[in-house]
Length: 245
Image (tube, rainbow, N blue to C red; front, side):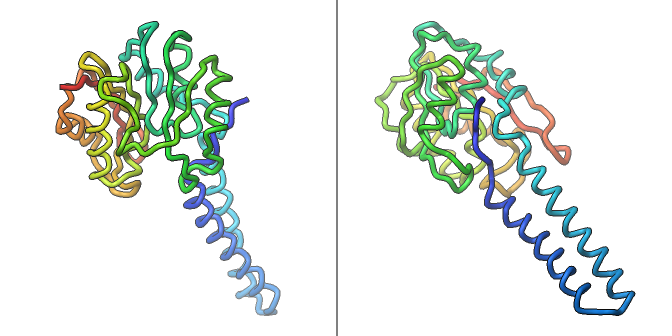
């Protein structure tokens, strides 16, 4: 079974603790008073705190650590052609969720590389060993590289397909531009960029889904295909493919 770690675990943990504190304080108030009205209020408040913490815990596990990223990756695979001798790079591979999802579409003869800084601030359990284990279980034999996406440790024109799945939205806009410039450098002239992105910048600022279309164009790529899919709060995420100029 795959284990892709817990995403955004610190943010979710803070929210869970907030609900736990509310319910704990309510329990203390209930115990220390004999006033019926205050006890009723404390009971209701405690129940709300427990329900809030439970709801956040449930959201933290969606998608579960073992669930492959299906719809978005399948959509990307429809527009990316993996030749048998293609050199494939997954930038920001994390624990390997995207490569696992793409595995049925990638010939085993391809050269597969996953790169990540493997920080644990966003994904709990984010390690090269876990990425390697997950992708191997999916039938691929990747090389896992620890590195900085803004300074990719690869030669010019060294990769035919570069995948960036749900990485740029966690970063400041400036870093996203640096990464796309690096991808343009290492991607062959007839290569492909495959991008999946949420309508966010710096993990907090909401943008339109078309934002990423313009960012990719500004980085000098020619967009070949783009599709938008529902996310939350009437927002859409973007799935696009592009070729370097």
